[in-house]
Length: 276
Image (cartoon, rainbow, N blue to C red; front, side, top):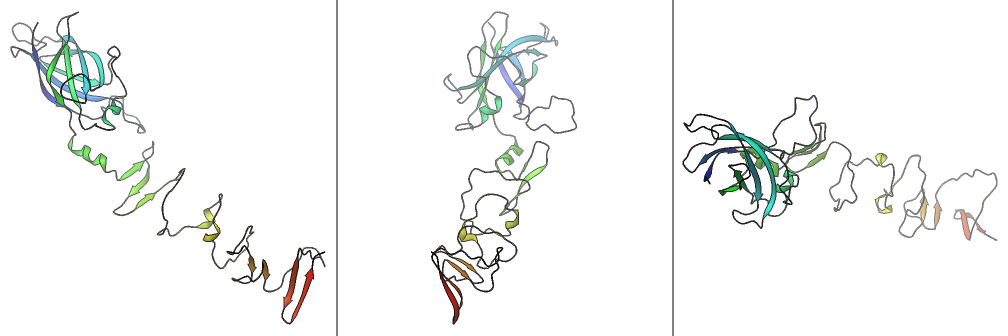
């Protein structure tokens, strides 16, 4: 059996654009990785050539595997098999388009580069030189590294929706939400919150501690406005459960219902009404 070795021309960990040009951007990148290489046998003769060394494209079965370690089989993260046309030693493939290899893991290829230990990923290439023969792994495995601008992915400056419209922007010391914010829970002191328009709060409960000391305008109130549970109208310091400073009108003529003792008027002109 021939011995082969791999000379890597380039391996790009980037989404390959394989679809025709569309009017709208796709929300998620394709689950594909562009990978190219150069294969020769033990005598340094390129695969895909004839006996005289002239180009003669030929098909070879190749298994690609991604491991979490440079050696051993205990850290296999992903694998697939493809049939490649190798021409004068060169091949080009889109990882993610192949078939599963038995019961070996074959998740979405983007998942291979997330989570704990994702910084240690090694590409393994195994080639079958003859139909029905065994696969030979090419060693050493190639460590997969970042392209220079991929480092920016760790420091996102904005977030866009599936249509490409920016909905979250970051500045030096602030984040601006340009759309709606839906959250199950927001945990913060809120000490620096400003420019909040209460007129835009259409539902939910506003804690009484957030109510202003002076309330004006046409409003309907329920609950209490003081720490004792007292309501003051015309005063910021109610002296009774209901303290009205000024005139009051009733929708029913000459009707007043009192529960308990109620004082009407002001000293020395007041009347006490006791409920019966």
